[in-house]
Image 1 (cartoon, rainbow, N blue to C red):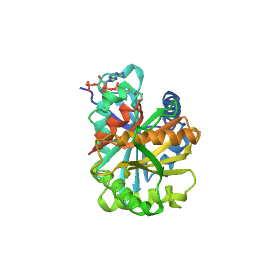
Image 2 (tube, rainbow, N blue to C red; image 1 turned 90 degrees about the vertical axis):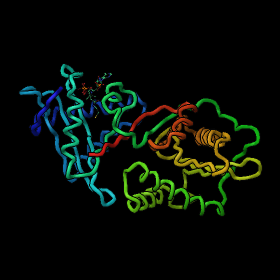
Image 3 (cartoon, protein in one colour; image 1 turned 90 degrees about the horizontal axis):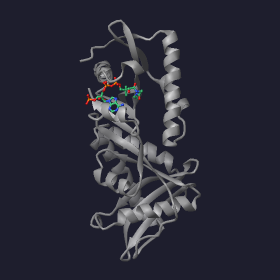
Image 4 (tube, rainbow, N blue to C red; image 1 turned 30 degrees about the vertical axis):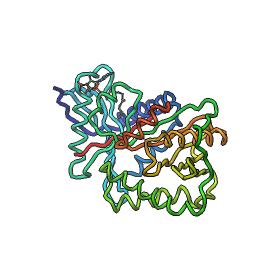
Length: 303
Ligand SMILES: CC(C)(COP(=O)(O)OP(=O)(O)OC[C@H]1O[C@@H](n2cnc3c(N)ncnc32)[C@H](O)[C@@H]1OP(=O)(O)O)[C@@H](O)C(=O)NCCC(=O)NCCS
């Protein structure tokens, strides 16, 4: 079993690590065809309350780097395992797993959990992080021809009367997801949902770049779907899809997602993205069967 020790990385090592890290972020963006987020990553580190870069040592031999940051969010302490790399010649000797244990130790007393971003296209990361529960996952689909809706299903813009109750339900559902995932307390989750959703949709139904639809079947509203077109070039996002209780299991979730594809294509996007919480297995299955592929994962372990 690997037994690693650590010391703070020196200035030269920090420079080397930063270059390796930025190269990896760029490579990941190219592989998943997502925008490069090197600047955001560097800024997050600068803004952290605490940031450490540890040199991982096997005896006297340096074998890798572990970068950890802590910051305050929604009144709670968050620890992020920002980067872990084991140098090529020293891989597959259990050092990655040992470094996860070191991250956990470091977080103890600082935060109840450690979160990390994982690349779903990298077999090494998927093996190393397989026991770290999935908090949420981004998924993307390359759109083809404009799909048609199933017979008997139509879609129209959500009415002003429908918006109020939908918004209340949307906020409650979003907040509940954070709680179900063990990420936030109820109060923190409610605050986060109100802040984030309020920022996204400041003018309600009239917010530019957003389309909110009601899906209708048998003359009744059966589902709703919220699509945003202005986050990334050529990409629209599904921010929320809900099938009414009593109408689930009848294919209306799939129909709503096809309506979102129509909306994205009409807005000039060729990719549709979404974020799904890890506990939501039904939704995960639906997106997978519709051809969405995971592009990034947020995983969280308790310490
Ligand atoms: C991911 C990484 C840190 C793993 O380090 P490592 O020291 O090789 O990992 P370990 O030896 O501890 O292996 C952990 C598990 O992953 C498996 N694994 C490691 N590399 C693998 C690969 N390329 N393919 C499949 N499984 C792999 C091991 O077999 C082991 O499984 P086990 O627990 O069932 O025995 C290393 O590959 C790396 O530095 N990659 C580049 C940087 C990176 O992607 N970092 C993660 C982002 S923070």
